[in-house]
Length: 341
Ligand code: DAH
Image (cartoon, rainbow, N blue to C red; front, side, top):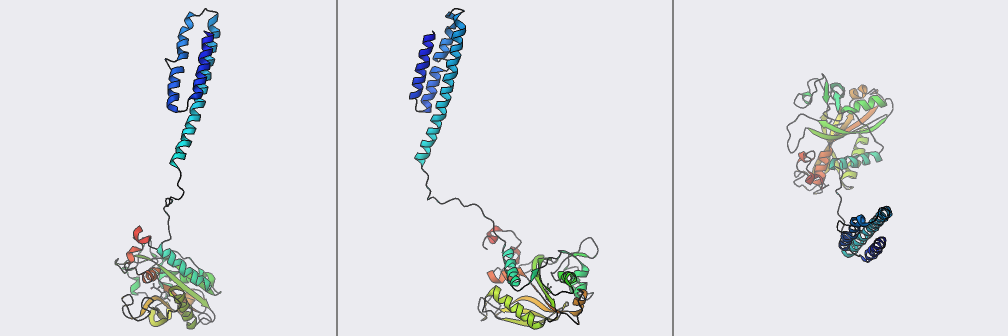
């Protein structure tokens, strides 16, 4: 019987070598190591051996079983690897196929517009100054020379908080005072970007929250000419080198004199179109020479210091630049709109 076992073992190994497919390997396993396989059948014959022969035979049998099992597993792994390789070679890899695009984020159109503005004023020596969104009535109105019953203080425009005199800023001008109080008596040249809040009816032209960029320059020899030169240069860098600007007299409590700046319409080149309402001009900002009272509130002696200030709205600039006709689009979070920029 030991001889028989040897033969079974040798035959099994030999036939295993010839196996080239996993399906054939399954059959081999069944024939050799399975419940009705040759090795098992031998096990059943142990009873016919003498007591002395049994231990040796049992030992041999187990060894054969184990070795065949190991040989089987090695073969199985090799066949699987070969089959995978063959499958990959057959399927082929087409490196000319276009890749699958990964979803990619982008900068919000207002972020892009803000960065354009930062870059232009940065080149002219203006630093970015951050001031809080939540302000006090004093910074937002009082120190900016708003008369006590000015309509802009009305409940309709301002978001109040549950704390007395604490409000959401209605304009970035509030930060002017903070910047001056921090820098005086040194000169100041800053822009103040940020979100502003107004309790207004939401329409295609007005939102309850929007961004503004404020500008402030304070020093010994600053004149209205500096204001005009700086802002005209800004308009040309933003809208194109051949744009013209014009300044119209206006009123703001915190500047004197005050003005609004128009830029010649870049769509019709000043001839008149729908966007500029046939005037040839687009209004883009408010500005003026800092009011002496405001300078004083910022810590500067208005006899010795002068300054100019301006405020502009990135939403309006983006609307003009890209022909957007509804301000609600900016914060509506509709990707179909945002992905266009
Ligand atoms: N704060 C003004 C507004 O919200 C804009 C403005 C006008 C800012 C004139 C200024 C300025 O600094 O000088 O409409």
